Each structure stands twice: as C-alpha cells, then as structure tokens.
Length: 111
Image (cartoon, rainbow, N blue to C red; front, side):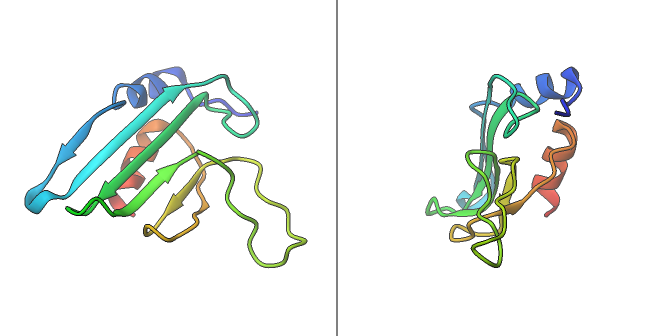
C-alpha cells in the first residue's frame, strides 16, 4: 500500500469546506477528511473536489467515495482503489491515479 507524503496530505486537508465562487455563479467545492488508510484509500483521505454550474449541476469531479465500476464485461474486476474522476454529472467515473495532493489539485483544474 503506497502512502502519499505527509506534507501533501496536510496541504489537501487545508481545502476542506472551501467553496470558491467564479464569474456568472460557477463554483468549486472541496470536501476532504482524514480517514484510516485502507486498500481503497491508501493515502488516508476521503475527498470530493467538484466544479459546479450556477444551477448546482456538477460539471467535473474528483473523489474516492467508492470504486469505479468495472468496464466492459461483467467478468472484469472492479479496480481496488476508489479514486476516480467524472467528466459530467452523469459520468459514473473513470479510474484516477492519486499520486499526491498537489497533482490532484492540478489535475482538477486542468482536466
């Protein structure tokens, strides 16, 4: 089980509860909480980073609430790690490799 460096986790935890408002009512919402490291969350945080439209609809999101559904056949295994990103409100998510908090924040703003 790979654990992210402690300073990057502390950086990420500092975003918990923040809401950033942008022009025309768009907003980004951050929820990050420490958890006991597990196979699903080896970095020791549970997180949700989401960009929303003025009407509240999620436009893009990164989270680790639960594992990504297996793609393709019903016989394919579901990924173990729960990290995923969504390109729309209806997107069930695709696997995301959590490297560290700084990369997560950068990926959130650039994908």
